[in-house]
Image (cartoon, rainbow, N blue to C red; front, side):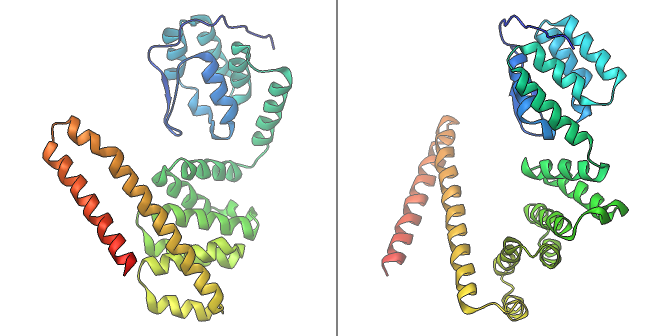
Length: 278
């Protein structure tokens, strides 16, 4: 394959947006960099006419856009088109390109169900929980899922539970975490199962499962201490977001709401300090 050398010009005024990761790219170099570092998230569907039009009209690379269209038309493998884009940037070394090709070949060698798991994992990673749930549930329901070792299948259930927690499907998440632990024997899975029981205030079941899993008093205390720390971090993050949003109220002319929010925060902080002293 020949090597294309791009004469870098002005970046595009309108970026190309990758929905999954929430990333904007403004130039061919940025597009190549994105593909190289996110290759496990890339699907053949990402090379759409929308992308080719952006290359043609926003980057003023009509000839290269047509080349990409022809590659995409004649192949359902992302390798040729990805390598063509990276070569067009003149940014990556020969060794880097060879390494990427090996990675793509590795991905292409996976079974359809393994590729679907990568897709589901990426949806979860980038907080697209509805699509993550759809993909994980399809995997679990498929006959091909039996090809996964028990530990891997347990991890899939764990990830599905995490997605269900994010959409507040807590009962389903609870059952999935319990089943997941039976398969993967992962301490993190068991811990999140107990966290969920505690957060749902299911005290009777919490005590029942302590006996069921034969947890020691030290293990229970460690769980509770860690959960308290997690909740504290979450509360602090929420408070920080509130502080960051305060100027927006003032800028919007909501001065009364702005000062009321500040007074409320200060009052709450004083109460927490007072309770802590007591």
